[in-house]
Image (cartoon, rainbow, N blue to C red; front, side, top):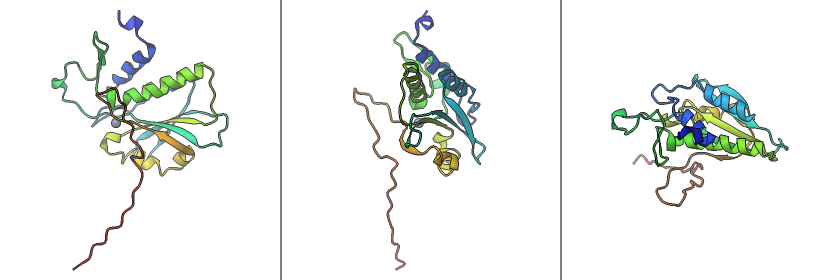
Length: 198
Ligand SMILES: [Zn+2]
């Protein structure tokens, strides 16, 4: 069968796609992610936010932990579906004969999370070491604006303790052979607006 020859990374991706982290009531149990972290040999911990949501942080300690870290960020939640408009059930992660995988979250952005994890698994199993610590941050509620997730987390001491130097997060799919990279998308740009009363 197709599944017996499937790349384990693909199987893990499909397993993650079947977890219904869909708004408005996402399954944020995170057992799957904690299990994968443990399997790879990453330390994982949860930071509880004042919103009641958890941020999951996975860490691969660098050989020079004083250096600023690399943060690989991704959101766990996905937007809702109109299930009757789908050719395959959106939380079944069906793979067709051509190898296309159908699910809410395939592009946005469970693919990226599994890519981070499987890249780290490969590097660790190759015996690689890096000076900088690498953190995976897995955040809730991006699709509803992040006000109960990342927006809170960045003001927590647990975030500053990550000692971030650079962060990767999602991009967008490209219909061509070119990849798009969002450069400095979230840089602050302060402007002053003067409103005169006359
Ligand atoms: Zn997204």
